Image (cartoon, rainbow, N blue to C red; front, side, top):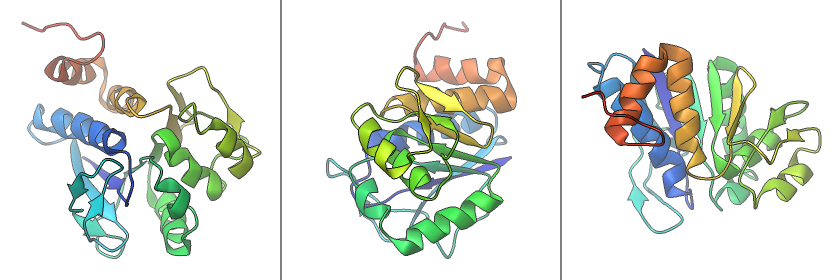
Length: 196
């Protein structure tokens, strides 16, 4: 079982974290809850408010969460302030050392860029964030023409809904096309076809 930790913060983009949360949770549910354990984490464990006002109560704080196998860093305008917080950057660097996979969605790439994880790597982000990412991570190789990029341990996706595409890709990478297609079908996402 992979433990999927999703970082949430004030002014996070809702679908950036809710989309991957749905993919990994549904995949586990459809397979007797054996494949993924999914949870949310904020700095202090206190509720956070997304860009459009939805409040979320995280499962854990930086000091209380389980070991993370797959770390998801969503985007949103809040990434601008999060990338200036020393405790957030330190937690991300420590988490990166332990995790098997780090996934950024949308402008979550700002945080990866800030701590140097995109240096020399191909990556992508929301189309409106690409110029800012060039400033934050001048050594990154930014590809504006893809939905997501897989560098092995570091994976990045383009804007908002692309986090669902990348999450489904990760499910397939870890467990195969049959498991991923079952999730797509349940979610009626993309090029799904009925299994009936």
